[in-house]
Amino acid sequence: MGKNEKKENNGVNHNVFNKIAVINDMTGFGRCSIAVEMPIISHFGIQCCPVPTSIFSNHSGYSSFFFQDYTDFMEPYVTEWKKLELKFDGILTGFYGSARQINLVENFIDEFSRKDTVVIVDPIMGDGGTTYSTYTAQMCEKMKELTKKADIITPNLTELCILSGVEYREDLSFEKMEMLCRSLSDTLKKDAKMVVTGIKRGMYLCNYVFENDKGTIIRKKSAGDTRCGTGDVFASIIAADAVRGVEFTKSVKKAADFICECIKESDQYGIPKTDGVCFEKVLHRL
Image (cartoon, rainbow, N blue to C red; front, side, top):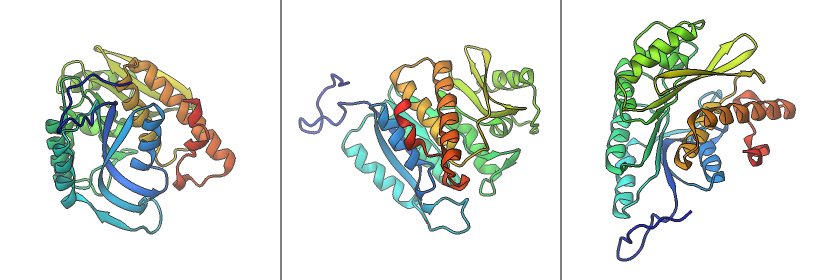
């Protein structure tokens, strides 16, 4: 849908359609990060504009990979967007390799956010009770600061515990989870929403939605083992729906259902778990 905005840049308007800026790494193979986010966001009729933080031939879950840090190029890259006077309806953040990168992302949000821009922070720091090896205590603190700029955050259980400063427990009760979410929400923007993702409870995989000072548990029978990139699939759907004005809990259910379909399809084709989910086969169902 078009927007009635004032023409800029000598009569050229670059802000006709909805756009989401995605700040994440670019991985050529192994369905994750920008390579997943672009097609899913585009599927919803929204332009996806990537800001690469690094370039991978394939992600680090493989035995070897090519890697190029893009930190030094991020500022001149974004400077060109300023010249074009780009405006974004959404900003989605991802995985970062240094405190400096998180600083650059904070600056980007300050520069490009408008009153109606939806900021979605996926505070990627760890999983299974363990912080990722590349994440320092300083970076975790910087990520806490970044969440304060968000309208929506999507931590897993490990990341909720890191953000809350409590010890991780896999069997953390939903009552305790609600207490942590309520306490964390006091540090966030007013009316910020959150969903705690990928909570294992027996044969179920749950998501815990917290908004308007109350929690909702969304249960889904586990479709199979965890695969690379499913968090990026989830965040992409949440971001696109937020820009489209879809109700948050409905969006979370949609994302959970879609990921289950992706996992089932990937298992059926015998896709290696490192290769992520073959979402391409079921994208038309979104």
